[in-house]
Image (cartoon, rainbow, N blue to C red):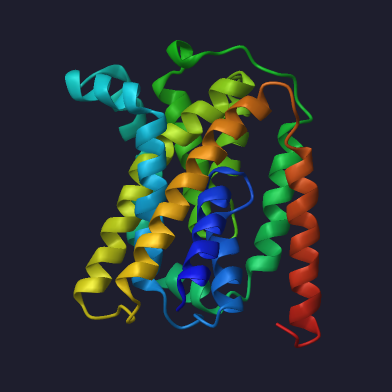
Length: 259
């Protein structure tokens, strides 16, 4: 793998991790284009470390507060919101790993993501802020995060949708969604690391891995900042149209044997 390919995959990972269009689905497509269909585990881990760094930097004040008060309310909201994804991930890991490798369902999953994004915009807006989020809200939002175990179901999209349905205001919905991403990303890194220690990684140069991680961190930070600002006054429908178009294109290419 060249450093340019790693850089481009870092851009894909960084942007799509926080835009509601599925990072895993886009990364699968990106890896397919650069010929890494059967490899890339070590690279995936480094890209996720990059996006994790982006969230830590953007939310540094929140994480500093959590370190000062490790058993505070925000910590428990994140713990409760993460439980559904942990349960589904542990019980169904092998099944969804196989789906991710083949990519056979990603077209339909992009379409499903679009349905939820569009559906969320049909209701009235909410007014809840961070201080108004209940543990029930966190569990509900976390349950939708569990659906993102499907490779092209957007984690950020599903959690933002669920947050809007629980009447969080638009900016807070994105803010909590991205905070909730940190345990999920950490969990993914841990699971990938376990596979790495079993010798399932490919040989990729250290330079390419470093460039990919830095690229993911830089563009991930941009995506987090932009998305929170965007959602204040704009609709999710544009993302629904995008993933619908992408899903239909993938289904067409699969049907014709071109993909």
